Every structure is written in structure tokens, then in C-alpha cells.
Image (cartoon, rainbow, N blue to C red):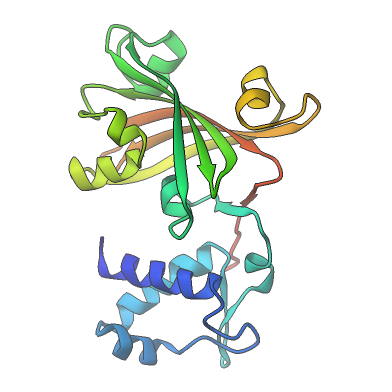
Amino acid sequence: MSKYEHISNEMRRRIVEGVYPIDQPIPDELSLTKEFTCSRMTVKRALDILVMEGLLYRKRGHGTFIIKSAIQDNKVNATDRENLGLTGLLKNKKIETKLIKFDVLFPPSQVAAHLSVDDDTPVYHVIRLRNVEGEPFVIEETYMPTNLIVGIDKSVLHSSIYSHITDKLGLKIGGAHRKVRADKSTDLDQEYLGCKSDDPVLEVEQVAYLNTGVPFEYSFSRHRYDKFVFTSVNIRK
């Protein structure tokens, strides 16, 4: 993890946990450079991330302030720039994984097209339930090429696939294309997420790719409507 990412993560934690008064500016960049023993550019880059996430805003001549509405919400806040996985989003929460399905198969044509692989390239097919603090939050159905993301086993699936990719395989995640839609709950949602038959579900269809531009994941995440909010931040220059 780079220095600016470390600072960004630490500042995000402080903001969410209420370390800084919400009606006062956070420490200025010069103070933060002394605290974290780094350059001012590194601090600026770290804070830029939080501005783009909608946690902070800069007021010229007055400092950098916390956006109240961003932290006064008991739902998981996933921004359109987020690519951390659930474990990365909820660092201070207890996350448990129930493995519903895990196999290797030749991909359907739609999956192969999104992963830019041939129909005869084996892919992992994984369905997982993610519980947060004992409550069901999301069902993830994921496809990944076995020749690119090697070493996926049950121990990886019960923790963080993204940590395996970055820490164990040494690959860098570049970003993701997402489609977010509302859907009716399915039998699987009702069984594992505790949804009622008339409950809506937030489905996120995602193609994630490495910093080389190669797709490594095609997935569908089914979120409980009362546990998540998806935020899009538009900064006017």
C-alpha cells in the first residue's frame, strides 16, 4: 500500500469514528505532513481521495471540512469510485463468509465476452453470502479466469479475494465498470438474505480489471436494500 493510501485510510477511519469535530475543519495539510512525516503533495493526494468519495469538501480560505450527510447514515456507503471489495469497505467490522457454491467451469458466452476469454478457458464460479456483524448483507456471484487469478481455494473465499489478488499474487487492481439496478428478490435472496418476497434488492453488475486493462472479474452482487447506499460524487471544477 502506498503512503498516500495509508494516510487516506487512516483519515477515513478518523472521520467515520468521530475523531474530528464535525463543525470544525480537519487539521491542515501542513499539520498532517508533520504527523505522517511525508510531503505536502502526498497529504493532498490522500485528501483528494476523500473529497472524491464525498467525505470531505474544501472551502477556500477556511480549510477542509467533513460532509455531515456522508457519515450520518447507518448504511454501507459505496461510491462510484470504490474498488476495495466488502472487506476493504468495512475494515472495522466483523465479516463472515458462507460459501454457497464453488466450482470451475467453461464460461457461458456472456461471461467469456465480459472477461475477454475464449469459451474453452476455465473460470472460477463462486457464490458467497457475506455477513456483517452477524447480519446478512450481500450475495456475490463471481466469475474469474483460473489462468489469471491463480490459487483460489476455500481459505481465500472465506476471507478476501481482493487481498489475495493484491497481496499474494502481487497484481494491481485498476478499476471497474459497474451497472447498478433495482430488482425483485429471488428465492436465493429470500433464503440467504432474509428478504421478503416483495422486498427490492440492489444488484451491482461489475467487470473489474487490472491496471494493465485485463478483466479479472465478472460479478453480480445482490445487496439488501436496507443495508447499502450507492453514492455518486460530482465535483465541479
